[in-house]
Length: 116
Image (cartoon, rainbow, N blue to C red; front, side, top):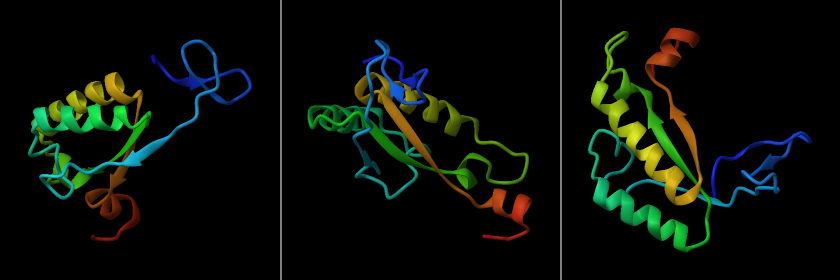
């Protein structure tokens, strides 16, 4: 479908300027509860995304657990970001849009003073 963006009227539109309506699903890989960026199994994710596309959906909402991306303040899990980027590439090819749902932990402590 191509890149989705906001048109002049403020509505989401596709690459041809036609209205784009998000029709999607909350997605968690069936082999792991939430953190499939740490346990990345591309072949399973590809099959799941293909099935979602076959169902006529154009968006997936995925959880991003920041505690796995940054296990300690200032220490980043580089492989997490590599896998995360690959998943976004796969999702955009299959279903057009990936909506990210950030699960906070270290960020809550840093910005809210709350240790989760």
